[in-house]
Structures are given as structure tokens and as C-alpha cells.
Length: 218
Ligand SMILES: [Zn+2]
Image (cartoon, rainbow, N blue to C red; front, side):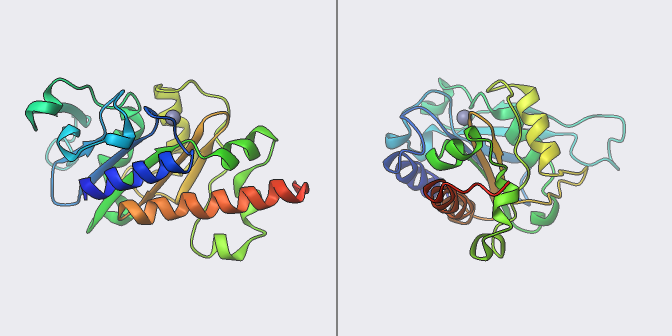
């Protein structure tokens, strides 16, 4: 699936959802105590699977280590990735990957990009969750959280606010598939790279329609 993640980042670049070095993705298989994340600062249109960073997870099981909080460390993966750093948004990804909630028997993929019309809509004062209610072809497949407000990029605050708005609980369950961050981008979660990507695609399409209509309805 790392190759598929490379494919979606190329596609995101072609759609102007990211500039060259933006965006980040993580993936975890439920039976592994590690996840993979895109490296920081590399050109996403030439991203390769051997550039990913492997992140080992510690203290995952409360029953075994009730007093220890989960944390992560980089684990060696490939010679190429050795000299790269994990994405600066790793607190966002770590929070969603340390426990997988409703994806606990499967795979969890977290995709963060900067789609034009989603960001434009939030900039215009539109709450993405509110407009999603008016479009059944969006909300029957994609649950949209209320927007996160202005928070600094690559910060714990961004991570905490995204987790809060997704209603992330201690077991890793989330109530929504996608959340927007004002002035910045979106984060989508699902069981494959393309499924997560489709949440973004649907929301972006609706934002484009709403902005074209000139009627924000909220
Ligand atoms: Zn970003």
C-alpha cells in the first residue's frame, strides 16, 4: 500500500491539493506495532516507498502497562529513509494510529492535504460539517466533522484539535471520516489510501459547488 500512497500524492499534486513538499500520509496494519509515515520535506510527485519512515509504537496495551503512556520512536527501515525525518505532522498521525478503534481489525490510513475548495470554503466562513448536511451524496458516504479553527501547522495543538473534532476516544474510535482545519487543509481517515482520498474528493466537490452557488446557507 505504500506504492498506492505514492500514487495518491501524485494525484493530489496534479489536482493542486498540495504544492511539491506539502501533505502527509500514515498507514498502520492492525496486527503491527508500527506504522509508516511520509518523510518531511520531500517532493511528493516523486515520492517512493523506500523513503517512508517506520515508526515503532510503545506501551500500546493498557492492561500490560497501565501506568505507561504510549510513545513512538523511529525504527530503521531503508538506507534512503535513514537520512530523512518523519513528517512534522507526526503528532496528528500518532494520535490516530496508536489505537485503531473501529479499524482495529483492518488497516488505518490517515491522509492530510490542502484541497483548494475546502480551504476556500472555510476561509469564506463555511462550516464543512454544516454544508455536508445538504448533500446526501456526500453525507451518506462521508461523515464530516466541524472545522478546526486557526491553529499553527505542525503543532501538538493542531493534532489535539483535530482529534477533538473527530471525537477520537481512548480506544482510537472516531465519529467522523474527515475534518477541515481553517486556513490550512483537511485530514481524512479510512481503511485504504483511496478510500481516505475519496472522502476528500467528495467534500472538495461539494465545496466547489457551494462556492459556485454563492449561497453558503449557514
Ligand atoms: Zn498541511
